[in-house]
Length: 295
Ligand SMILES: Nc1nc2c(ncn2[C@@H]2O[C@H](COP(=O)(O)OP(=O)(O)OP(=O)(O)O)[C@@H](O)[C@H]2O)c(=O)[nH]1
Ligand SMILES: [Mg+2]
View 1 (cartoon, helix red, strand yellow):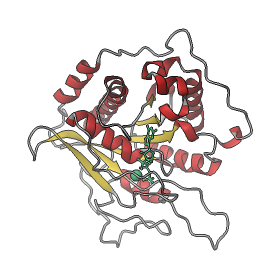
View 2 (cartoon, rainbow, N blue to C red):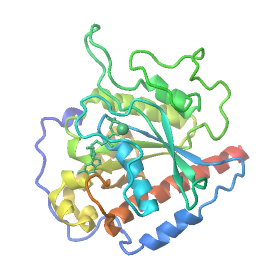
View 3 (spheres, rainbow, N blue to C red):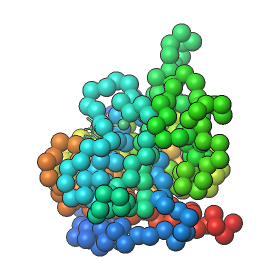
View 4 (cartoon, rainbow, N blue to C red):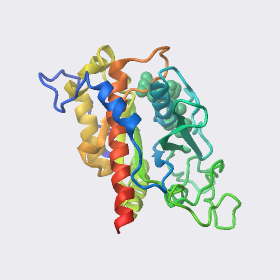
């Protein structure tokens, strides 16, 4: 990341103990907690979790992974792509997850958006990623579902897709930064700056923030071999500490995950990591909405 580019990456080591305690057999408890979750505020249909981060970081794949986990079968509603150089996701889209019957949903939803790209240095070059201004508008609830992002100009009040009077349900309740653990070194200062600007805007609105570190299988061979090494991997610990320093997100708000991307069946250890992150998103979002009521 940024100034880290020239520093060689240390070979991964397995630490003798987990540096963060993880209940590997606690999947059922976490799953039950999520299944039982009901927002305290009756106005709230769903907690809205907005994902943002560099192109190809695994945003859409994370949404699919949560969907897969909760449905208990592989799903791919948020289309992900292995090859695109520019962001594959181009529109603002909210994903609700079905719970039982066709019209019954979990009371949380994910908003998938276009990825961030480095700002072009030459005036003739066209910017290709989502604009920071659009993400800030999205957090305030001004972006309508289906809006197609325009990397060259942000949404304006006069636009058809501008929601003039956002309700509590349109606003974002948790901001989730998504970072690829296997590609942190090429992340440039410019992307970090954009992510910090977004985070600061979220802070000003009191929106809680978290980060997930994806592709931990690609980032560390000892984790690829056994997911339970995740908190024993010296490399992942370093990567999480870097995310914390560069984005200013406390370590306890950063979760390593492996998304479902090539498998045909779910796995309890992969699920346990995703559930741990999801549980914190729900707790943070719920607290935020309840504090809004009392403010
Ligand atoms: N090995 C591995 N691959 C992953 C993981 N998560 C995502 N991928 C792959 O990474 C690629 C990009 O994932 P996407 O989910 O499309 O990323 P995105 O952040 O939505 O990208 P844009 O929409 O283009 O901004 C896809 O080929 C995924 O299959 C992971 O945890 N491990
Ligand atoms: Mg995407």
